Image (cartoon, rainbow, N blue to C red; front, side):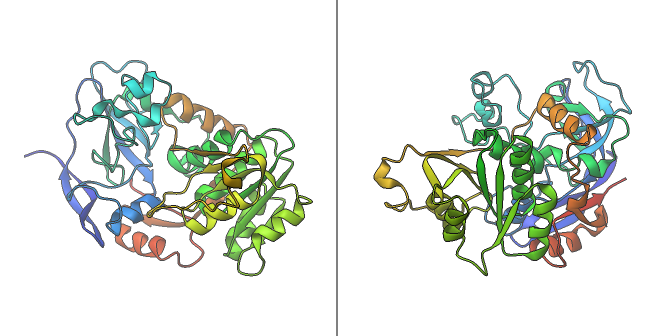
Length: 359
C-alpha cells in the first residue's frame, strides 16, 4: 500500500476538495518537495469555475514553498532537507521553445505539436502544489534555494505573482523616468506596480475600484491612485500626462474595458504590456489603435520560471528592496482549503492572497 497524502483535487466545475492521494514516486530527473506553504491563484479560480479545463482528479496549485524530501539520481547540487521554491512555470530547458529563448512556452512535451503555455505544468498538466508533497519535474532546472533568514510568506509570491507582475514591467521596456499606468491592483497588478518602481518609472498611476487595493498600491510604489468608480480614468491619465499619454500601460485584469483603456492612454510609440488572462475575444477600437499607424507595441507575458528567475526574485526580497509579506491577508490550514477558495473566489474581507499552511 503506497504512503498517502492530503491533496486539493479538481472534482468537477464548482468543486475542488481535499482528498487522499498516493505520495508521488519520483524519476531520476525529479525531486519530491514536502510543501510547507502554498497559496491560491486567480488562475485556480478559473479552474474551479470550469473556465479553464483540467482533468478531473488533478491536484491544483502552482505556487510551492517547501523542503526537499527526496532527490532523483540525476539531480546534482542540492541536499535533502534544503528549503526551496519552484516556479509556477517549470520549464525543461530541453525543448525547442526553451532553446529559442522563451522558456515559459516550453512546448516540447506535447505530442500533438506545440501548445502555448507548455511550461505551465503544476496543476495544469501534472499534479500541483496544493498538497502535502509535490513532484518537481526537471528539478535541477527548477529548484531554487531560499536565502537564509527569509520566511515562507516572504518568498510565497516569487513562484508566480511576483514573476508575472515583474514580467509585465520588464516586457513593457520601462525606462528610467517613464510614466506608467497599471490597470487593476490585484496581486499581479500590485507586483507590476512594484516592478515599475524598481525599473525606475518617474510616475506610476495605479487604477482599481477597491479602497484597500489602492492603499496597497501606494505601498508598492504608486504615486497616484485612480478609482474607476469615481473618475473617468482615461481623461484623468491624459490630464496627469499633460495630454502626452503614458509610455507604458500595463493591463493586469483581462477584460475588454481595461485593455481598451490601456490602449487609449498610450502615447504614440507607447507599449501596452498585457498580463490579463482573457476569457473572450478582444476588439481593438480603430481610434485608440490610430488605424494601425501609432507605432504602438502590444506585448503579452506568461510568468517566467526556472531557478535563475527565482534566485533573482528572492534576491530582491533578501536585499529589502521590496516586501510582499503584506499581500498575505489571510491564513488557512491545507485541510480548510475549501473555505479558503470560497473566501478568495468571492473576494471577501479585503483578501489579496491567502497562505495555506501545509506543514
